[in-house]
Length: 213
Image 1 (tube, rainbow, N blue to C red):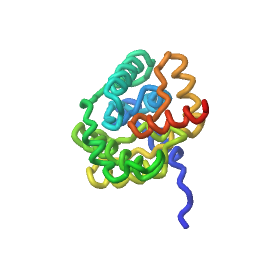
Image 2 (cartoon, helix red, strand yellow):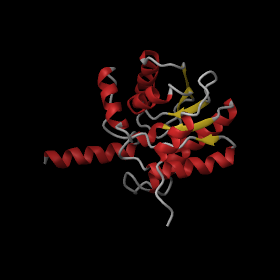
Image 3 (spheres, rainbow, N blue to C red):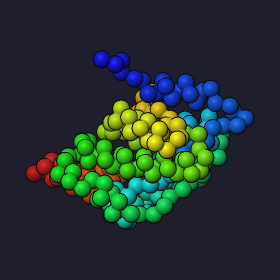
């Protein structure tokens, strides 16, 4: 049996060797401003970051647009050492439904989510290669509800496919999630109560209904 990997320590080793005079370029996939907050605060000390907001899973469109606005606002207001840029490429829910076809019935946290991870990470790897970035990764691992080993497994597979390095991550470590909650409060960020897709929204509503009956 292979020893359990500590993705956070692997990442620390990489970024702390970075050249401060010429910081490596990172394409950071972000699902929302709250999840990106602690990640940006930390990584921007060492890396030149492009935040890529690519989330065709998010439902409805108004939610998608609200999260974009909050992401942009955070980037503008967060004091950072290295400037952060932002890219988004529109709302394309059909891509999400195609990616998870046949998995609609699976509950949050299973294979449907893994297919969604892959969809977003693949687009991130493609863009990272297109922009000539040194690394790509995602903020998703900051959530205690997301599977960090699976995210890293997919990221490493896509790194080989697209020829751009994947930055290991488990951002919830070292109180990363706690810090994201603190920063969300400090900046008054909209903090959604469901992951983003119509299925997670439905599960959340069902859970709330059960508590009130």
